[in-house]
Length: 400
Image 1 (cartoon, helix red, strand yellow):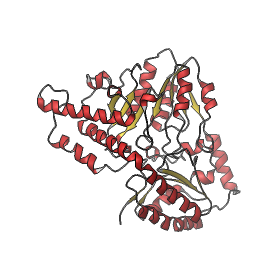
Image 2: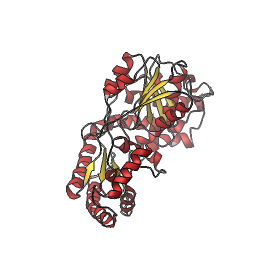
Image 3: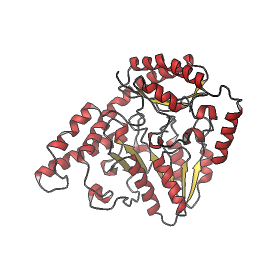
Image 4: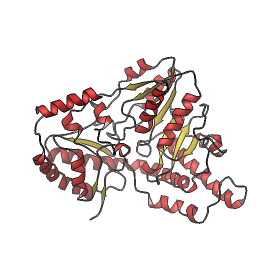
């Protein structure tokens, strides 16, 4: 049984060309890129080339790229830099639907005396821009908003947000881990001060990422050590990972023109499910979202049961962020959207990639109706008026 992988917002397959580019730097060219000798110098040249590739994908200058280990480090480094550069400001603005790499940092900062405003979203997962504008004060040090949501794929109007933020002289950080490689970005014409990316979301290996830092933005390093990354991130460079990220960035630029195919396959999957299965709905704005992502709520059944059933057919999907999969709590993103309990626990995310085929989509469509029908037959409830469901919704609203 072959694997049908529709969990690409969690991680992606390493592209063969990416693997081929990095392998020699694990096996043969293992010199330290900071060394004075030729053996290390040639490695340093490849790191420089990779930095150029990443900069070209982002529409940035090479001096604005800082290599990191992952998206989480990038988010932490950006928040740390913004706050350490403005020690007298104690207010942060973010959203209720951010990745844990931002949300959990903000929660910890609250314990240290910072005031954090968590912007709400509506039923479609969209922000209220007026709420953002009203939340900015003279004490605001940072606004951190994701470019696109990892669970529902909803894209936020980043440049519109950025104009409001920059008009008030506030640092603007964007977690673009899910957006890079799926929608075009151009930092040269952007209001963004710092932007986070992660290699394993665009067909590079895990353990490598990058942080864009606009020229002129005061940046104090999160990891303190040697002179690497122009003093902005200590530690010997992950050379194979950096070269892999560079190649992945180059390929992502080429494949941006092909995302329409992913969108068509996503729509084929989504429309097929909605047509074949009653009592299900798409979570999130149907237009302003990533081309590869759909999040569908199946009423009256548990998402975990759906995933286990799909797994028997070799189909990989998700019920939310892989970074919170150890929790039994329903998705904080879907909860923030105000979805009813019947949908909240039965929502599944399908996220495609350039490797996804029409045959794979058709296979999912062939098995999904039977899976949902069988699970609903076993379900202890069958309609929205069930007293138990109302009790659960009330308990959930009280606890959060």
